[in-house]
Image (cartoon, rainbow, N blue to C red):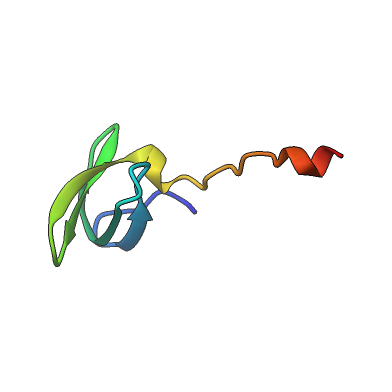
Length: 61
């Protein structure tokens, strides 16, 4: 997923497990302000990057 732009509708899951869905209002160097229907919050840009999956030790057997 590429980084969002102001006006984009996004749905992102934070490291805490919280999911934020809304419209990007603005972006600064480290994050984006997402205005949702339930609440608005600043989201770090790394939350928009694809998550790397941990290697499953069972796969190495």
